[in-house]
Image (tube, rainbow, N blue to C red; front, side, top):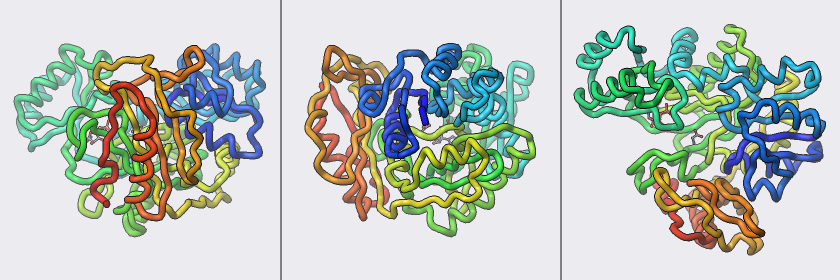
Length: 427
Ligand code: AMP
Ligand code: GLY
């Protein structure tokens, strides 16, 4: 099977690495990819939103399966675009339709979906320019803290947790009247604050059936002990120690099953991953957000724990045959630590030489996944804020974290930074 994978992060390197292990995989193309994916398959240079180039690549390279890594092409409708092309009628696509991708692309759409299907989530109300005045009054009367969310995609920055009413009103005005997040923030979801501990749960669905993948916890803040700015993710662990059988049973019955049934009831065409961003409040799970893709860096810990052949799983999803699949998980812990470029998530440099990549990894159960890297004049240099991550597996979480930290220490680049406390609450 020839596979085209869209994206360029650590998630895509991990997906490509896992696909490559399958005997059913012939050629892998990744666009635009990174220096890590170039070691697994062939990088292409078109953008993930260049739909015509994606279509032409599928035709020219006889692609059998397309896997969409990030959300942007999904929300913009890549799946619908390719499905209407007669020349691509045999192409298997992993990714939901444009309409179903609104579960990630619009917070208001996701909240309405959850309300309709009685899926536990924070109480909310939606505002825009039309009911702006009503919004001001509503904010005055809410308990603190209160959460403001730009409706659309805002590069992970559209959520503001406000500690007082003045801040809430000022942010609300900036979003609706002064386009703080552009079009994405012209509609605002005002949501009740949930006090709990977060985790990420993933399924692969064919629209009717689903399989549960390993769960994970992502460390989003730049600073240790979860301080400072939000990032794309500074590290992750899997499985989540507090997500025991009793809790996961609730997640399945109260959240996953009503979601998958809801997709079917609403006639939403969905083949692909659902990423449930959850929060555990007391013993109860609530949905914070849906994403229509795998997480990054969560993928870098869940795929190394997945024993199944990924191509087989994706083929079963795309042919609506997931019913008979059983997932096999490695029972050990996985941890990943991400090294970022100094200044991230704000301004940072690119093009910095990375050293230490050519030493062969001799230890078992240790993997390096590239995030923002590129080959330039025969050497590998930084090409993004999140640069590279090291994943390790071990029987104990503390050993997995230690091993991934040791490995990330060995890889050098100027102004490198990484969190030393991934998994800190559990070790
Ligand atoms: P989102 O983009 O919806 O994932 O939100 C980003 C982050 O904001 C989440 O990972 C949570 O840490 C936090 N957050 C979002 N909604 C809530 C909420 N209702 N209560 C508490 N924290 C929240
Ligand atoms: N790590 C969070 C995300 O992928 O959205």
